Image 1: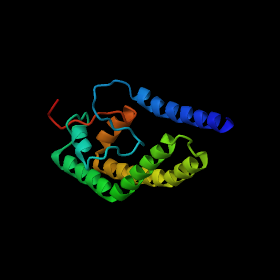
Image 2: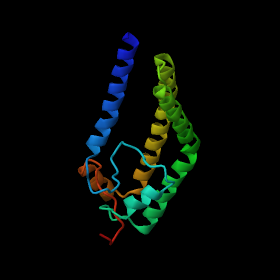
Image 3: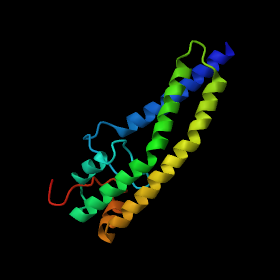
Image 4: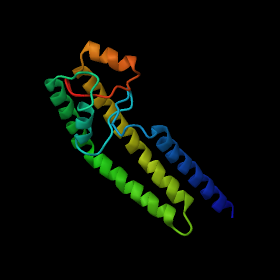
Length: 159
């Protein structure tokens, strides 16, 4: 009975953590946002970057767009194996949780196995973000930082 309470408690904590991120995102306008220090998101090999570029408040040049797209694609290429491994672990974790009597030890072991991979992926994303910042002009960086990094990137001349 005690194990069931512990597992229920852990499940509630995970649910609250997952739902907090969803609620924090809010309804919004559906556009992708770049936040300073949050890294690169998306698993579409650069497609999300194109959404940024088409909604820019930074007036990116065509050359900047190409450089940023290349950096995003390189990140996705380099991180593919890592993202696939994390996805497999997530599926295994789901299977463990779905068992009639979930094994807390196995679940914790799986979570422990996932943590270094998440850290490595985040480090790669931050490295890519730093490379993207090098592509921006000082004025663009100033605009980005003055808004707390919440500038929507939009292609120059288009609204």
